[in-house]
Length: 162
Image (cartoon, rainbow, N blue to C red; front, side, top):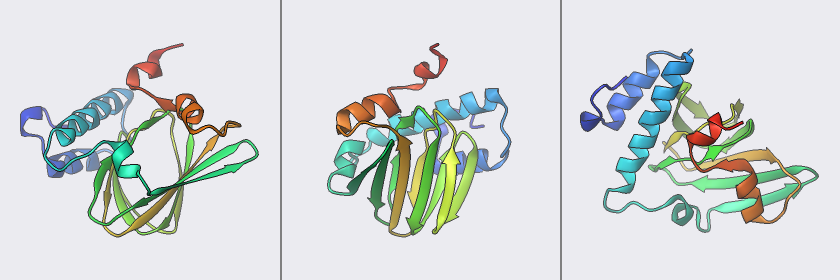
């Protein structure tokens, strides 16, 4: 892992996260910290915006019995950091190509691609092409704020609450 956070770059994070695709719990915790630090640095740069601003006009919401689906359009050339989903989440990339940095490592996905992410996953997403990414969450709620309160963790400290 990048030991000196003052010299952290996206390239060094990718190299570090590519080296061990079966991380120990300790390495996962270190990677979570690195992703949060990368997010902090990204939000301090000029021409950056909050996730809510990025999502404006790019999300379609879908509701079915016991399921909330969120369809996000991400233009080519974007680097975004996701929120932390509390539960296992279906991820469906229906169009495009992305590279993803998470506690599980560095992966590149080309549509069509489906995977399930573990609870309390936060990721850095780099789009190589215009991408449509759908997530599916178990929820009977239809109010978007209620859904967010149910499925999104504020930070990783919620991982350790009983």
